[in-house]
Length: 119
Image 1 (cartoon, rainbow, N blue to C red):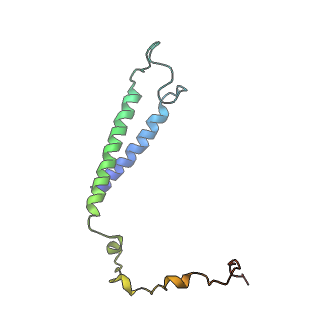
Image 2: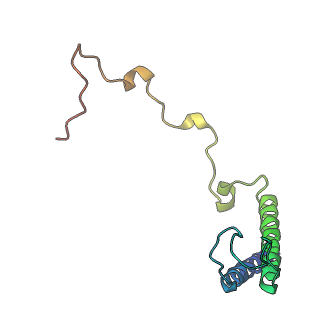
């Protein structure tokens, strides 16, 4: 079922790109171009405009459906469980960390601390 919805989703994406590219460019972004009427800012609904809305709504519906399916499939599972690698049983089995005092450079009077030499 998930594969069918994914194929439909990809076909909708390609159709949506095609329909948007077929529409006439009017020079202004965000609906500020000419057309429609002399005094109105609203354009007439064309067949390509309606088709764009239909593809966009269907694309959003398939996106939400794929998200819900993916959330249901991953409930309680880990990536490590899927590939068969066992997670460490206890986090304290790893290497011990040195005390915080050992991480600081030694204090040598008033001289500034210099980085180690590359040689």
